[in-house]
Length: 134
Image (cartoon, rainbow, N blue to C red; front, top):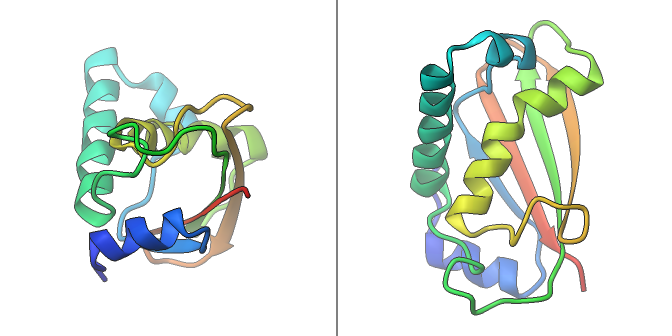
């Protein structure tokens, strides 16, 4: 479901939790590491396109918001579970795409905390839940 992108930005700025479902699933971290660098950058560009299509550009893109931390939960639906470090690595292209689109200021610990969750299921679905710290 594609929501109104202006409403997403308004809710996010107001401090409300924003939940967006993207009908795609990141490839596993092990597969990502084995890709040639050109294909790995293609994966990054794909996620940039998906993030812009489903969320639009974020409030940090034009510099209108500064000094706010973002708390995020990335929930992935998979048939087979991954270990925790592989799960975090598989979500790295998604986090980079969110940063480039302006939804997070930086992916350092100062500006960004992220929790990763895997849910059993056969659908290819990534759920992004974001909230600003007060």
